[in-house]
Image 1 (cartoon, rainbow, N blue to C red):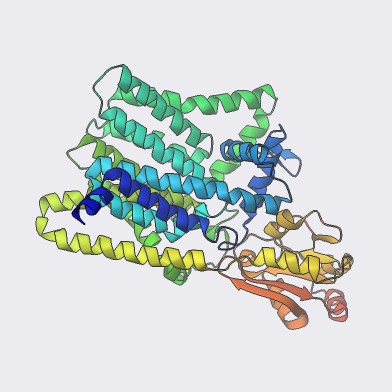
Image 2 (cartoon, helix red, strand yellow):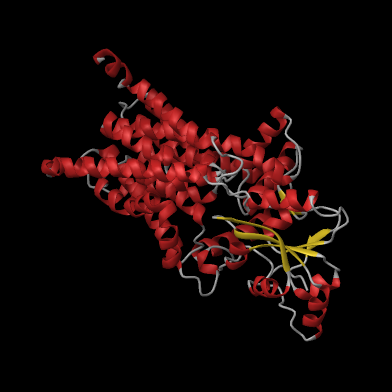
Length: 508
């Protein structure tokens, strides 16, 4: 028995077991645990375009709001595996790629934490990250945060390894490699500059945690992939479009322009929403809060690599806090913040133990409780059935006459279900009447949170004046409903001037 325990407690064995746990959580329910989201179908279509040798575009216009790293990665798998189908089908197939990347992220996290503070804290960190419900939500969708987060964490692992080397050729090579991996993160999502370059600059200034020459080498290499991307854009004569879209992106991140996210919807009670979701993401919220606190404490460590990680976590937490209070508070912004918290919190806990060893039992109990609750919430998340839009599409295609005219009301519905014969976007009573729609598809939560063309009041009118012929309630989209319209009531409402105009999209 002792030999077996020794074998299982070896670093390689522990890492493999945690990887298997992460794999189980990510592979189970990959098609049904999370409803299709607008970003997924958009990114899947852009990956298809890159697989065909084209630059990403949306509705015929070049797309530069995000760089093409994740699209290029998925394009490789489209070509290698011969993936095909609608954008929605493609997104569901490509979810498997993110699931694998999520497993790799857990492995990298375990190695980073073990390097910083030892094996036992790494086990807690790995188990929490493997099962964290918020991280699972991102890894279970085709979101760019998963490959970007993996690149950020891998880059930090390589940089930490470089800092442990004596000056010389090996250290320089590691610094170059770390910078290039950071560059892959940057060319996947621009915002990762706040999780890579900014903490490195801060580390130079804060107690000389990083040597200036090391920072220069790493940051210079970080810029290389992005400069290659810019050269391609410039050679295609698209630099003005790039600048225009990036300007809008900066306005959105700073909060000067509110288009999506909690802060974009007037009257949204963010505190109430967080309380509502605490039963699903409670441990994730604790990690988000810990990113600033643990980061600040770790940044005061006597060990320079721990200070660097502390600054990375502290700055990541500040970015997340700003986005919630003032910026575009979209849920995916928290992904890299959670990753930072998972690696900095063990460092902070060890520092507390060094100053007050009597807190050992309390900290171990807290870590154990956090792990157990995270595992329970993660299990709940993966056992959930939340595929309302996929089920709605199956209903529309198999249960209605082929020539039925269906009006769509959300951006997700438009990108996931079109083009299709007699289906089109009809987000108002006026357009539903003018196009002769017989049915209308709504997704309640998306309309309430600004991810739709129709006003939320349209759902209220349908509840009072139309017949629901299909409905599904899930945590992502709320009530996904197919309504059969009553033509006489629709005509009467429009003739009375009650058109319920759309909130966006330029539709009548």
